[in-house]
Image (tube, rainbow, N blue to C red):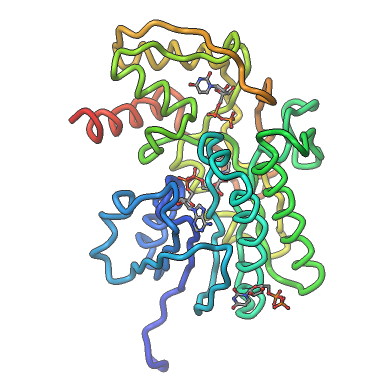
Length: 319
Ligand code: NAD
Ligand code: UDP
Ligand code: UDP
């Protein structure tokens, strides 16, 4: 040993106490990385990371990414941002600030350290897509002034910043576009379709399907998503992305409601509600690039993933 400390890779995870962030922290620790988990606990919670607290390689910091941060790390995963419409519309100005100022600060930090940095971008940058399924080359169809714009445009601007820091400062960047992901530790009240339907089914309350339920989404189980994220971060630096990560299996919202009712054995009925403004009609990732470059594709079928997620919600909230 030559240095004053044995060397583990030091990884910063912003939004580390959230749904995806907590799974990412767990996987990084399992492979022996030192993890600095940063969060302002807006939508994340200490209970998501409670099981990691005793690990000597794990450290937390309460911080808002819209403010500068001075730490020493080797890699940065930038996940901080509320992700569900209910949460990101709660304080839309703060949502845009989190994406844009957050990206600037984390890119500034990465630049000072010459650290590799990954941005959790989103399929929402495609808006209500006119091309289906969506390949990375598609530029999207986004409303700049609607209720979803704070999230969509914030994430689009963050992508722009990542690529400008890459071109202007040769910063090693990785941009992933995450499609709807679900699993244990989703927020029970975030209004997202999977958590909503499972909570409603377990309470035997009506399942609220918006519109006629004919809009489609593609649902990726969290373990598959994190595997893709880790593989991409560690891939050849010339691969900057943007890279779609998600499960190409496409289901209507009505099909999802029926599956959740069947798997929970619930007495819930289906209740139709008005479709929210700007709700995308269909969404499915084209994951050809991820398949070719990372030899990655989702392994967990919707049914298995839903069973694991239902099991989590049952134990955590109805145990
Ligand atoms: P989440 O809400 O569970 O996690 C986000 C975390 O960021 C939370 O812990 C929250 O407290 C924290 N946070 C929010 N604003 C912050 C700020 N200003 N400073 C510091 N921390 C802040 O959501 P998630 O589903 O885990 O999403 C994680 C990331 O992945 C987000 O950037 C989201 O946009 C992206 N994403 C998620 C999905 C999905 O389906 N889950 C899809 C596309 C993109
Ligand atoms: N920054 C940070 N941590 C660092 C370095 C920079 O939070 O270790 C922030 C800093 O506040 C700045 C932003 O990142 O506003 C962008 O940094 P950059 O060096 O790109 O720009 P500049 O400092 O020249 O504005
Ligand atoms: N949705 C629904 N009932 C709910 C919550 C959501 O029918 O209780 C619909 C919503 O209108 C959208 C889809 O499910 O068409 C996915 O919604 P979510 O908020 O989970 O993700 P996003 O719209 O951001 O993809």
